Image 1 (tube, helix red, strand yellow):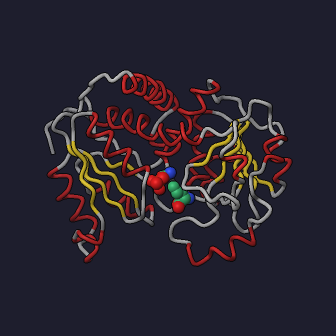
Image 2 (cartoon, protein in one colour):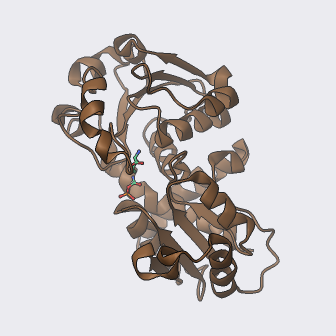
Length: 306
Ligand code: CP
Ligand code: NVA
């Protein structure tokens, strides 16, 4: 841990940010993206180290954090349970103390959200949630940056979530509340978001099983996999439950003319989204994926630079 006067802040859910901080991060992410594309060297995290604990697979989260730290002049360490003592039962509390004594920031991707909270409680450096079973806040930084870049402020717009009431859906619910947009969640019975997230965001969300109505006049349609990491054995049951919840051209045609399509990826063409939609002109999934890098650099700067 390096000496800093900065107040210790964690980023475990989007609600760790207020609206002005969220908007400032989006603005900063767009600036950092321009700088990166211009080839400007900017190294505010020189000699800083990020330790990344991955208990689930990742392509985008790992590469964006690792590249972001390198571009900022720092370093990132990839840690998996398979080759650390975490996988052999070392308590998360002890790991938090040790890792935060040697590094400047921790990132964790895990199953139970409580594990990320425990890590944060025992860490002397900021902890970033790189996805838990409950939420995926880093993805929403990138998604909102992408919407702002393409269409401007999302306040007052209508966003439609199609599919599982999962971690991504929960983070969309938080974003709706903070940035003040309307979120219509179209999901099969039994796959609704968790009640605690409904209670937190009820003035900003609607839940329906009518996917066509949910997409009508929408400004942004978003979906995600039918079976998240950890639910692999439910794949077959979920394929049946979600068979009417594929985002197709027909659904996109119900939305506003300038509606966008997003997906956090990885995607399954022919399941939650048709190839025509994800590879079509309304899809901004590649910008969305790239923006993980820029949005998280803005986050790292926010959490770590005095
Ligand atoms: N969207 C996302 O978090 O991707 P990865 O699982 O590849 O990190
Ligand atoms: N809901 C998905 C998101 C992957 C980035 C999962 O948790 O597997």
